[in-house]
Image (cartoon, rainbow, N blue to C red; front, side, top):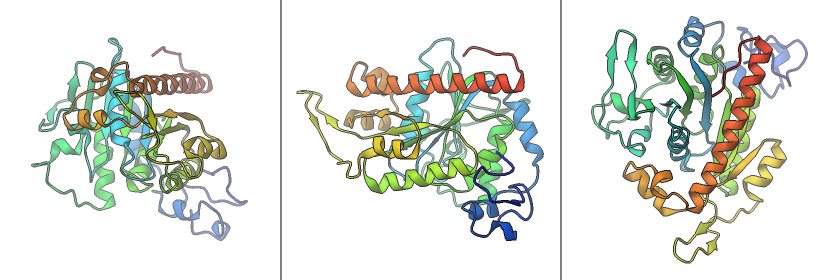
Length: 328
């Protein structure tokens, strides 16, 4: 994260300064509110996390401005799609602390976390896809997580620093809706390890797109690259007659127009298919269950674009730092 945002005024004290968001120069700055709540000063955990994740090639966050747009579903199946390559190793980190749905979606609810000398062992969904979630730490799926921000940040730090992720090609992080404590903590703790970028999931309605614009604004203020926008729950395609029907009309042009106006990549649209929801309820991989359907074809195309973006981002980082280049 940059010490001085690109759109900061003259005499900006910097985001790490105790005066961030409070100095006279901060008055009227569009970053004032977020700078005032960002953690100040270097956290020793940043370097520890950098060392812990040094063998993780790519790190991506999955964001959404609004809940209920299919962000966790997308995260789970992005991991499944990346893990379809036999030689790949994929990790999934669920930091949606108050609503951990990934254990159910990925079919590993009820599993427990084991601790060894090297840290917490993630739960394996398949031979090459592992995950960590607060859902594994609860006594019951019905238990509510009622935590303040500091405790949430502490758990995220533990997940990044103390989980034995080993060598990964991708670490995919599922976040809660909005732009709150969890997002700020992730950006701070992963500052040294490097984040390839954020994938933002939305639906076609303007009420969802309005929140996505805020999410993009957040990413820019904390210098988090945006991989692109995915539009979920697009047209419904009948599995029998294959005709297309619009369920959620894009009153303002949908995610395509929004991405164009915001200057970010549009990765594609996923059609609305009720069989996807059934697969999630049953903890099944819809990419395998529904292979060849329009939803899976569209999903694989989106995943290819994400991989291309991340490979390019890694090469650019290595050129800047002089590190040796590695293929995923």
